[in-house]
Length: 144
Picture 1 (cartoon, helix red, strand yellow):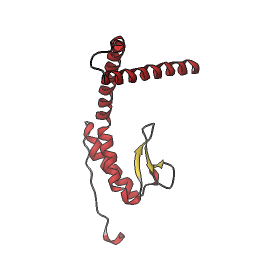
Picture 2 (tube, rainbow, N blue to C red):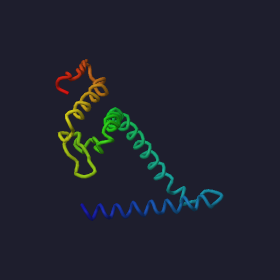
Picture 3 (tube, one colour):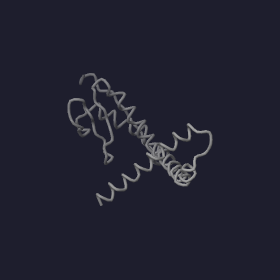
Picture 4 (tube, rainbow, N blue to C red):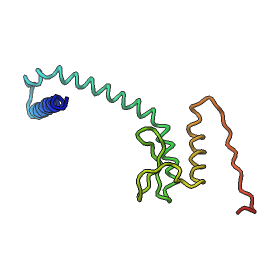
């Protein structure tokens, strides 16, 4: 499979190199080029594939928008601590700090974790049919 992949990549690179040359020739000429006409079918196919990819990327961006908004919001509160909440490759929340590897969210302080939970409930709960109430109580003065 490895040699087939390399061979295919070489062929693809040659095709796109030739296509780039054709674009340059077309820019510098007044009319159509015979090589351009011969490759028009492949160019149209590539254009169709790019349209599908663009549509797919737009759908993915729409799906991730609530998560990205949540991450941007929580991270705006963590700027001073130089921590940043991210979603790892398997979809779990992790904390990135400049001095260490990415860690579990357990390294957040209790206040930071509470803030994360509150913001997640407020921003992401609207996508469920369950209503939740958030009650925030101030600490009693004798404990401060």
